[in-house]
Image 1: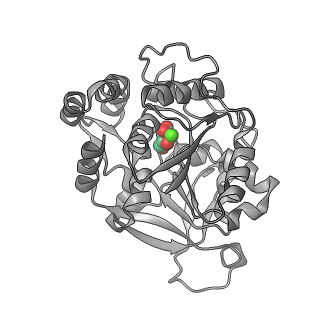
Image 2 (image 1 turned 180 degrees about the vertical axis):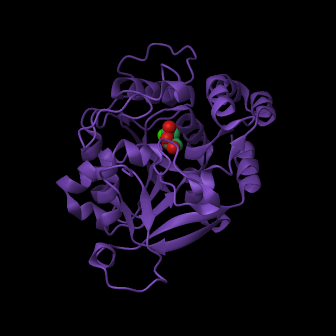
Length: 314
Ligand code: BDR
Ligand code: CA
């Protein structure tokens, strides 16, 4: 499976990238970066470092430093630390692994080079994808699938994690997200409704440190900061592996329950960043919905199975 990984590393982004690097079924074509968990210089440097650390040969391509709504958001240092990776020591990487050009152009060129073959796994703000779509709307017909970590649709009472209704990747660039959901490519949304089933407890992280060599230990160290955040805010032991679940979906969609329907994002006002789906089963002709393509949202997942698969893989 050919994959472009669009990311803002980010601790759970690092978990997802390690997973991708260990799956023999995956042919990683490129890692595109975006502002989000840190500024673009930092997320790009982190992607380069993780590429080296995980022995990945695919290039890193810099993407958007600013979002389409033009609103500058605070960096979530409380979640991912000041360096985006839980404040672990990160060596100099210089230009290593960096490919010239923009992420949007890389996405366009790669989709044209492999029509119908490339899965985009996007686990940050959707700015790069939206810029690609604006520049060349034909890419929507060329992608095999677009798997997005983002959003919260209210299943199991899951609300947002930035505001009561908005999840970080969508809230970070709601304009981009609404454009992505408005395009007729096959989109699957892996939101907070299911990612909160993927809790890596301190015992699980210790097991990875024992069993997954240097990379397992690296994840455990990165997660120290992340775990303090979850403990303080949500009161539980462990961290949520949001982004890794988007990778699981690429391989094992049968482990998920989904619902189909058009999706909209609130782009301004109090509820900015809220994601709403109108189920296909609910009929009615309101053009705000009926003029939009249907996409899948994930409504349930077998978290135990996913965590075991992750452990076996990494
Ligand atoms: C998402 O926001 C980021 O902080 C994480 O990396 C993940 O992609 C979770 O809401
Ligand atoms: Ca992310």
